[in-house]
Length: 572
Image (cartoon, rainbow, N blue to C red; front, side):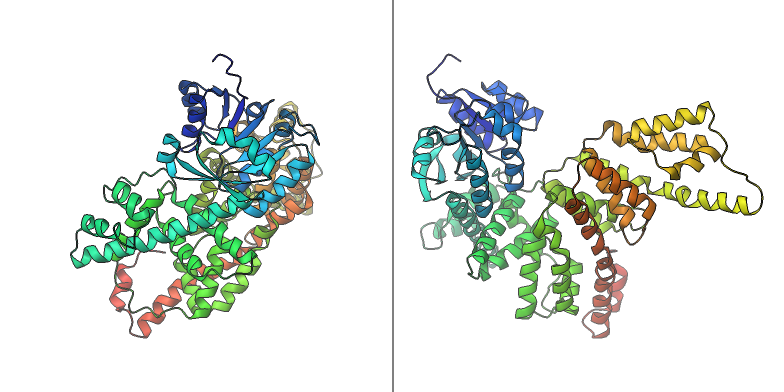
């Protein structure tokens, strides 16, 4: 592209929204360097006329403005606080024309303020500019852009952002993200109640098209009745381009913000509760308009009239649980009904790592997966729940598969524990004098293990001596994720720590070795402690497994359920 005289723009995040937004800037004559973790997205951007680059730092290099369009605050912070990204901006602390980062993601307002302080200390200015209007608005350049920042900074970015839609100055930095979250809470609640109304009218016999025409000419109209129902729900395409879980994330940001301001959000929390149930039951990639389909499917389920309504205290605990942990299901429902105060106590206990956040959300979910999937536990409901959560937090299938591969090595501890006892008995019986010198083959195996796994421990010595070929095959088996896996070594060691320290295993020798290894790879004491804290909640599965059974049997005893129904229940 010939030099247009316009500044170079870096663009990080070329997904459903980012790609058409970056395309609008290309059409306006800007040189845009774009990065996305998806190779396909980068190739698509190149075909659109942009310049794809291999990293966020390359997108930022010497750019006057860098736009971030990413899933959440975790990803935004991972990008924007990376030293290579900051250095690439070529910051000049105190300069009037300091480089600008515009976070157009749906981020958390308080974390946006904290990020602004961090970047400011490094000579970079931050403006938040989240958008509303969906993919259609991104393509047409008709988005509502909610901008937060200083007056000077907002003035500097408005010429660029004007090509994306209409700009609304929301206030100081973080205000844009606050308004965006509150807007999406309203939008999601509108969609929920309008869907309930549409389904009720349909069952009464009123045609959906008729209801929409009347609603849209009356006071009940909203973006849901004017756009989402006619364009995505009635045609059953459910392809608005905005994910259900992203909507739920924004709703939680809004209710959390209300709580931080000391304001109750009772209706919002109830809406969050219903959306969270839908997220648990719908596919990972579900569009947010599929909430209507989920509601329709709920209509066809057996009547819940016989189920006693939750008390205000139970409703309060349920809303808090969903807000903090982001999930709900039959096991939690049964526990809530049987002993709500116990569930609240568990919530406070299990929430500690989620409040301190020494580990990323994705790595936390890896720890849960490692504990739940292991041969000593095999808690499949937890495995499914935390795989879904890990994917929602940005994990790839390859990363989760590596967690499982690392967890599959637990079985070797039969040898780690058994061989030393065998050696002790042999000595006591006079059948062993001492360790024999290693032969050439054994030395070769030891060297291969050390190269592949990055360490050697004395608990391998006797196994190497007594059965070198077993150790050779285990070396190959356990080394696969170390040779090809995408996780950094520190995280791999945390996976080992998770299942070694779990109450179902308690393998102290391995635990010590892997703590030493993790520290050697740069892990902090707080990160390792957080792994242990996550593993320490494993005992709750005694309740989540048995409470639904207890609830079912009490229902039979009380005459609220036909005993014959027991044979028709699906295994929980």
